[in-house]
Amino acid sequence: MRVAVGRITRAHGVHGEVGVQVRTDDPDRRFAAGAVLTTDTGVTLTVQRTRWHSGRLLVRFAGIDDRTTAEDLRGRVLFAEVDERVRPEDPEEYYDYQLIGMRVETVTGQEIGVVREVLHLPGQDVLAIERSADGDAFVPFVAALVPEVDVDQRRLRIDPPPGLLEL
Image 1 (tube, rainbow, N blue to C red):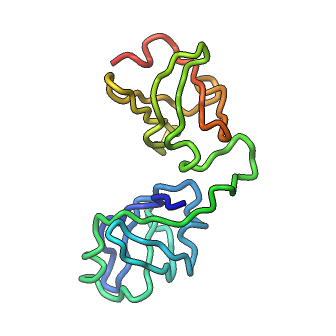
Image 2 (image 1 turned 180 degrees about the vertical axis):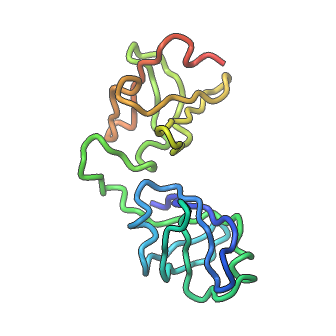
């Protein structure tokens, strides 16, 4: 399964490093030296090395040796091939790709929509739920509001307080 793991921001320095906006909950594994990623334009890139700098992930790809070449990658979304059978060790943790596309309903059975994206915000993770006519709903991914996640059935149940799903 191909999943988005990041987006290249801007070049850093003159030797080909780029900043990456991380879109995975396991950046140390997805961006490990030797990891092979593809861009949204089909370009294959191999991670040469990574480092964290001022809260940003900086990545050096093999063959990207100067600022101009690095800057040409700006805005590209990075994808990794992931075995969808692999699950986190903790049964209360989930990879983003496991949640995206799940049906969402309330604990009373009311259909809400489908998880479109998992937002990793500074305070907590938030589920962006695509609803057919009402626009997106944003639900904090905490046990009190999301008491049930069934990966095998591709469904999660939410228990929203009054007003959370209102526009």
